[in-house]
Image (cartoon, rainbow, N blue to C red; front, side):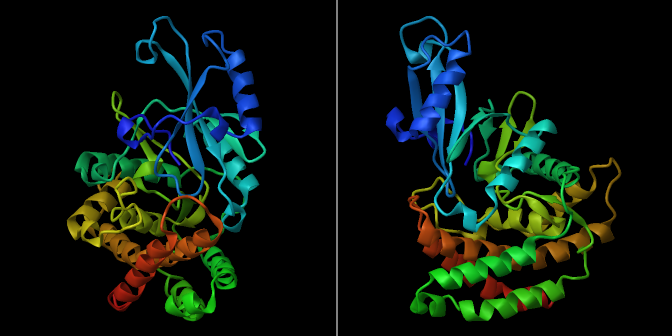
Length: 354
């Protein structure tokens, strides 16, 4: 999922055999073209933790003198091996076009090569944010400014909202995959009406404020250069045009997660940002033009952001159900989905009364 520098999020080195044969061939060709790589076949492969859609590896080669790896410079790339069943969530060709377009905008890593079930990317020499970082007011302000910049990107293709169609399509897929007892337990039969109700409810407030949304702005998809404080948002698999309020709401929901804990599927909603944190984030988001946002504008956006948290819970609840049936990554998708749906039903009465 992410290009990670800090060792606490890096697992033990893996054998190159974990990398598909076609990827190893591509890696050898890339390294052979770099004059500073000592031996293009002497690569070290390190799995990166926190990935829930793909398998992600850091690959590195020695480049300098010295006798030990830590005493020598290394050349690094990121290898992304696509997870099973991702075609149920998004179109991979669309995602690749987005990735390449983002690269041209200077917004993310460069694409170095493709292989049948994955790609090789530039390794960003920056630190991936942690769950704790999102609570730092200075970091949060940087994220708000960067997110506004992301939303304003001029991306090709239709500018219509994808959220509701995606939810409806995922619901059909989830129903097809789920056994009857699980579908009943998760109340899937009632969700079509819920999605339609939300779509109708949200057709006014801030629905017109559409931007290019990341749709998965958890801490692992944000990197910071600690020398310059520059942020890079990565991983655009779920990116699309949507109401910007939805993207902010989804970011707030992600503050309940710590995907690098011993139980990464467990969500702690006591960590959901309080009203002051939310207000500070939205104020920073709206003030990026240099003029301080009006109080009324801040409060209006805060209100609709709170409503869109419901859509976020349905989105990732359905994602969890589908992933549980198609993905072999070690993550308790079903329990994750259950928690998201639980939050939806718990919060719905109060949120829709706003």
